Image (cartoon, rainbow, N blue to C red; front, side, top):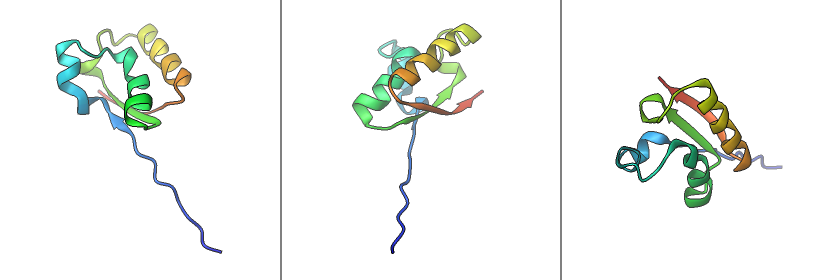
Length: 77
């Protein structure tokens, strides 16, 4: 029997830095964009790209990630 491994990739928020800086994308939209536009189920966050890096904002972001079936892998601070 041959055993296969799947490699999981994630999308870094920094990959879309221009869109975040221009206001075209908001952090709460990022999990849906990662899943629906790029087909990935993992994201990496950057605190300097978050509009409001507070606990309540992070809680909302976790909810959005769960709604979209996306895991938050790393948060760069």
